[in-house]
Image (tube, rainbow, N blue to C red):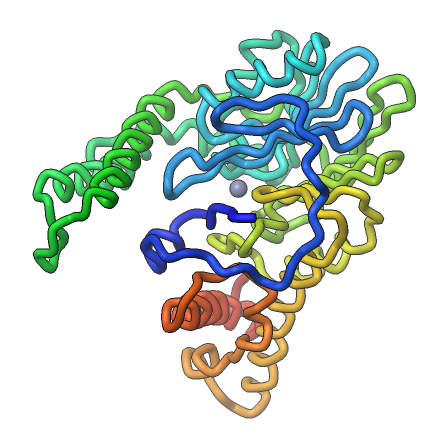
Length: 374
Ligand SMILES: [Zn+2]
């Protein structure tokens, strides 16, 4: 099964290198009930679905979207990166139910899970949007800053697009090598995606959670359908929510789990380790990560936990021996765990990638281990 590698690391470190499979993680065989060119909708249990998306660009993915059908309405878990994708998701949802969407819950504040909030609110008046007290202000801020952030004349999105267009027009790379026909096609596709991304980001509306909760919140959806929202605290983001359906043993983990490699930008590693331990106490028939395929058990949860915990233990031991950063972070060795994750195929790319991942996480985690900040 070939799976797109998430976000920046792919383009910055790997180029177009193929991915090598890790030790297999048990997946739930997809029971596809609807699809379009950018997504498949899979049934996980009676009235419980997930929509798994193709990435929006070669840098940004859409988050997985959960769809829970209750007696009188539908609950949506996360609303995607681009509004057009949320519109398309509603069309997929209409293929399995004509009940109105009454509830939406954001697992955390990142835009690939919240930019579509406005589409759902406009499509379903009276929609209740849930989020934690910690994440709600960041969701609002992230949605409000788009016009001056991503869409500004000198924004990262615009300058990256301009650089891509200039490179394609020049016909060769910085070393003077002419682009192959295949590379030109890929660049043209990427340019098209990024232009569409900018158009779509301009359409994002501010629709932050209006139902703020702390700790655990239980949503009764009628007909005995009970859905638990639990704030797991800081982990991948400042506040990460899981959604659990105890009767069906379906767990939506948000970006506490991103497959095939953890997304660690702006994360809180020390509490994240504890969250991964707590997650494993939930019995699962289907475990839905924030990105990636549906898993059948907690093998991958354990893999992510073991990687972070090993870094913490190694750093802690080195500090006790008097070693100081950044030297300690450079000495962390995670080679034994490399085969539990998907990493690029072929040496030395494969080793260089894992080395870079280990070093990057170790450097940031060293601040946690020493007690400065995390
Ligand atoms: Zn995400």
